[in-house]
Length: 284
Image (cartoon, rainbow, N blue to C red; front, side, top):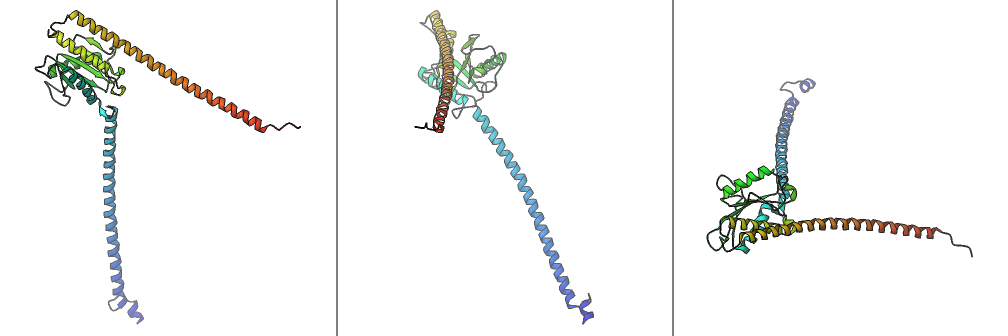
């Protein structure tokens, strides 16, 4: 019996059982290794997919942030400019079109086109507005851009609208006209005032009418005088706004100083109260 059970031969009943057990254990181990390998491959694939999703999310967030930077009150700047100009056009009987995504002659320059008096009949001239809320252009670049916008939109006059004074070309002031067919204006929708844009609109409209000789019955000199008066008054408005901003800043500074002084007074009062509380009563 000892010989039979200690032998590895087929006569040993335990030898077959041992071999079968080892085979099953090896098979199970191989299956586990295979499963772990497959799981590892899936995890790696998931890591790659997660990395791609994160990159896509970061890209979308960057695009959204860029859109926010170029947005006024939650809308793209160009759209806000169009809305303001369209309201003016309706009041004047003009037609207004947003054309920034529409190809013209040789390109897409020009965001808004106003057709003068087109609300009641054939247009008596066209004004193109280019809205910019991004980088600052040089004076030469801005001139070339406006000339191209005029050609692209078959316009008689071009206006560059920017969101802040620091986006005007160097050495160019707001509402300054060049060559009788170009104008620069600052319009910030968040300020809530369209006055500067209204002045630019009216000036451009008058220039087109005068250029085409369609200001019949109107003395050109009288019209020029009124234009100069409007520009002069607008300059005073800008000066007053600047002073108001300075005054507001001074008032805010004064309010902060008052708050600081009040806090100091209260601190002294608290100290006085503390000293009185700590003082020993006099003996009577």
